[in-house]
Amino acid sequence: MIIFDEVQLLPKARQAIKYLVADGRYKYIETGSLLSIKKNTKDILIPSEEHKISMYPMDFEEFLWAVGDEITADTIKLLLKSKKLEVKKVKIQMKLKKKKKE
Image (cartoon, rainbow, N blue to C red; front, side, top):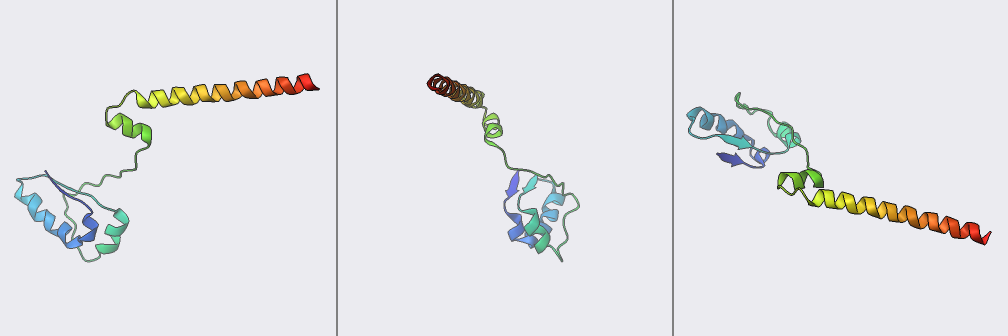
C-alpha cells in the first residue's frame, strides 16, 4: 500500500497515479483537501479508478473509540454528571439558606 498525502499540492502526480494503478502491483491511497484539488486540477486527467470518500474530523469520544479506549469517555461522562449533580445540590442549599433568612 502506498499513500500519497496532501496530493492536491502536486496535481500532475495525481494524473500519473493512473499508470501505477494500471500496473496493479500496489494499492494507492491519495489524501488531500478537496477544495484545493478542485482549484488545481483544471487541465489534469483524474484516474477513473478513483473512489472518493468524504471524511470528517473525529470528536474526542470517537478518537478514544478508534484507539480502543473504552474507559475514558465513560469516566468523563460520569464525572461530568456527578459535577452537575453537585452544582444542583449547592444551588438547592443556597436557596434553602436564602429562604431561612427571609
